[in-house]
Amino acid sequence: LERQGVGKKVAADMFGLALRSYQLKVQRLQESASQGGTTLWAAVRDFVEERGPVTRANILARFARDDEASVGGILNDLVESGLVYRAGRGAESVFRAMSRDELAALAGGDSDGARAALVWLAVCRDGPLGLEAAAQSTGLGLEDVGAAIARLVDAGRVRREASTAGEVFSADHCLIPLGDDAGFEAALLDHHQTVLNAIAAKIASGARASSADDAIGGSTYSFELWPGHPEESAVVGLLKRLRAEVASVWDRTRAHNALAARAENGRYNVSFYLGQWVRRDDEEKQAK
Image 1 (spheres, rainbow, N blue to C red):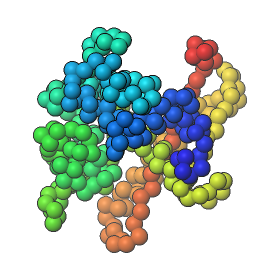
Image 2: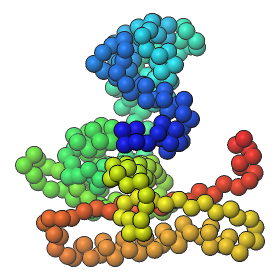
Image 3: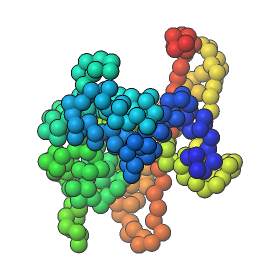
Image 4: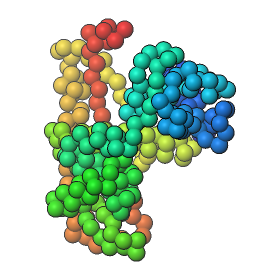
């Protein structure tokens, strides 16, 4: 984003971060000053895995040439993500990397439906994928991915195909039904990736203004309302109406594609995202 001319403050706002938090996160992904050739994040993770259990004081001493706040932030990231276990507080707190068996046990706590939804999304967005590639894309184990694939193939959501590289799997669409709790994580990921990809594509195109016939981009409108406002129902109902309209177009497109012979060249994909957020005055006061 910054290479495309987006300022740090704007980039931070895009990710919902304060400027200082954004700068710290970027620093964590830059090369470590204490250990060249790798990012600071990876260097800290490797050090904890190789030396653990290791104290916070020892970690800070090892990475003394790097920003202390960045190292501390990485440790917090690793703990919150479940990759590292922490015991104690302060300088004498001890960190130990979670073993592969421990991580597998934690992942095993997810529902079968959630795993299937994540695999379906990965196959649809990045397919055709083999089992190992799907496992790498989702972070799930091969056994879990195999079970999810089998479930999706049986349901007709994913196709099994032969290729020169072996058996691969693909899907023409990924629809997480309304009210489907198991697909909540996959739907969130899909929304997030689509928004960021749209922003990145717009910036990469070099366009700094919008036009009426844009095929890439987005628009944001904010409305101030109150009970009894003549446009209240029209504004609040935007999500429902637009979702129904887009779903109708999606159904017609899918029905045509199921019967039509696909063009060999020139095919492309369009991802459309819509969202709505309502914040009331009492919520804003609580936030402050």
